[in-house]
Image (tube, rainbow, N blue to C red; front, side, top):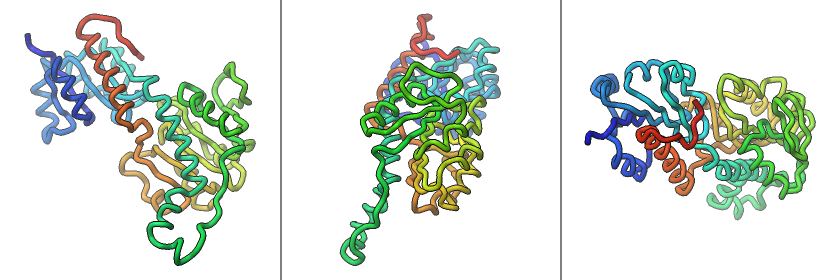
Length: 313
């Protein structure tokens, strides 16, 4: 029996490609020099698309592959998939929630600690001999007990909050509606910002949250506040963030996401009080294997006419 075609938009680990190849005829879009030719060849045989949250899938890609039945996102964020275009064409859309929640929350806390305690700079202090030649590393600031405000209290935000409880941190959150949690609620990040020492961004991406952490929110932060973002670069007014970092109104920041990834604004790399990550909050072997398995389960369910494990449309 002929295998259904699967377009792989974003590069996947070898273990996923091997598993997928057992059921699908793989078309590696990310590796193709002539992408238009690849799409033309697969026009009548490609029935599924695998993509990533930071890449997505637009209407033009769907139109190039009229036999596609499903777009499966390797990750939880699907804001760059044109869901309305997919619905209009009868294409199902799935993502991979839950399996990466705890991993992203771990990195959020790791980024916060790395930024506050200047862990990368202290590591360099030891390695380059400064400890011997210059003496003790400059004092940093603590994390435990600080007031933290979390923008977006979904799965990941709630997991971050649970970790912050262990650090004895008073917790606030901003969301469109109050939740049944023992934390202080604010309707907007700007309303919350003046009452926290740390602003942690974990809201979902997409048009609804674009610029949610706006200039008003960033300017409302107390002098010397800390800032972390493990959501999407689009959630934050990046110009306002850069200005606050440039002026040292934000004393430390940990950033995993940016606009225009991976060609981010080069100014971020000039700040010695910022810890940078390459959008890798879910980047462990265990979690990526779980993400791949869930994506594969969605793809196979569609081909078998079974209910999709994690549909979003």
